[in-house]
Amino acid sequence: MIGIREKKKQQTRKAIIDSAIKLFTKKGFEQTRMEELARAAGVGKSTIYGYFKTKDEIFLAFCDAELDFAFSELDRKIDENAPLVDQLVAQMMGQITYVTKNREFGRIFVREMAFPGDDAMQKTSDLDKRYIGKLGEVLGAAQKRGELPEKTDMLLMMAHLHALYLMVLSTLYTGDVTSLENAEILLRSLVLQTLHGPAAMADIQGQASQQWDSIKQTFIERHNLEL
Image 1 (spheres, rainbow, N blue to C red):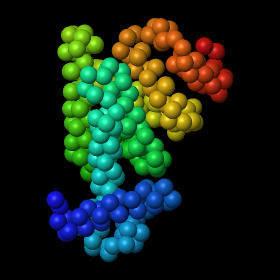
Image 2: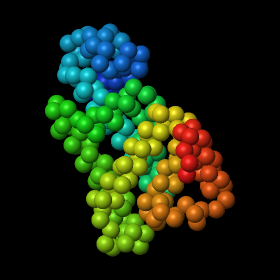
Image 3: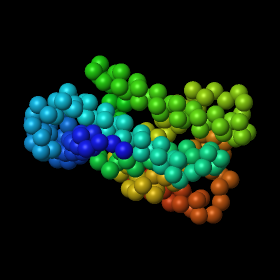
């Protein structure tokens, strides 16, 4: 059981992060000052610096929470013997769901994780290790079950999956996908194709196929494509 003092510290830390989410959304990350965050969180300026030295540190604390959420979603929704595609989609949708709760934070998240500044390099590296470690466990278990070939290059597979995650996240920001439900359909389709090859979706029947066809047609019409 945590003590009263520790509980108070956790509450204050959460209040700072929650206030940051609101202010970043309203004013933008670059325009928000630490003094404003302190006032919004109901703490003194010196107190906020006792928890976070910079806005980047607040952002990275959000990233920690984002990974915790994604991993807990995976553990909550799916057992370790579920099909690989279900585990991967659950993990990535957990991240996407959490990040897109706040568009400004999501925008910063993608920028900082893909192109971290010098001050954030070590922390983003730590977050990458957590992510890769968990994903490696999922892929390794699937390989033992025979869902992935023994000669699978795990690093390349992780790179493919991360690219898919970023792409689906981007579609929610551009408006090509307008709901988390459709984002999950798109993500599942992409993961299936990555795992089973270019023709994978041609073998999918029923409602899943119809849902994907609908999303695809909307995208084609929106961008005036001929495919």
